[in-house]
Amino acid sequence: MSPTHPAESLAELAAKLPACRHRSLAEGTVWDTQSLFTGMQLVIEQGVAAVRRGRGVLDLLGPDDAFEVGQPKASPAGEPYEVVALTPVALLVLPIPQYMAHLASEPALAGAAARVQARTHSRLLERLAAARQPDVVRRVAAILALELEHVGTLCPLAGGRFLSLPQDWLASLCGLSRQAFNEALSELRAARLVHVERRFVCAPNLRALSQAAWGRLCINPAKRRSHCRLRRSDQPLDCRPAAP
Image 1 (tube, one colour):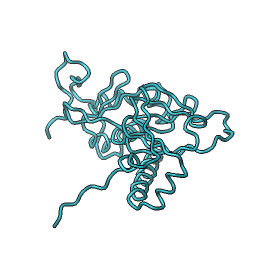
Image 2: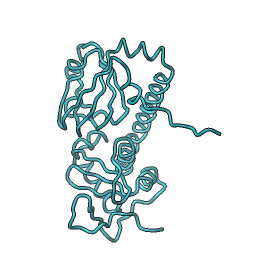
Image 3: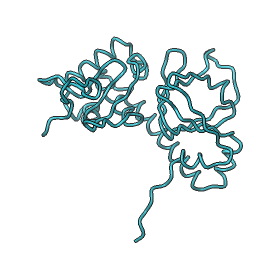
């Protein structure tokens, strides 16, 4: 049998299109999707961004996520959506008509776009289910696990995943006040399911966090606190899950 090769990602395929333009956005860059990039198809090549309306965070976007910026419309709420680069972002920009023409004529590109759309739809449904969790601690665990898997970065020391994001933004994503979110986060931290610092949350064991979110693992305080050598070089590496 001949070896199988993984299908190219949407970003890899979009970058080869003749009309594609590359844009680099510095961390903290904010753009209004109703003015900048109007009439464009955007694909994130690298980096993480947040979709925000007013003070509310609606979604997080990571590599291979795509979204379309149509013609400006009057917003019923009076506030347009904006996108904030949480890290340096490499963006692919394509005029919508050219992009749609390539979708119609190139099966590989159409397949990659369909996979991205299906993955996005599935993730949003999972987040909706998590948001309906009556237990606030498990709700926070579920949404953190989902977003850490989606846009988190692999920890080079302990193999967990971490995300750098202001905690009030994470609270908004969970549909909670900052106080309620912090109380839930404290319980998860006490159970050693997450490690938390300012603008930084890490799950040393993402599977355990997900199991706790859906009631398959008890959330009980641990005997020891964890330290993170990735963030504090003077602390021991004590964040790895205990051996079974």
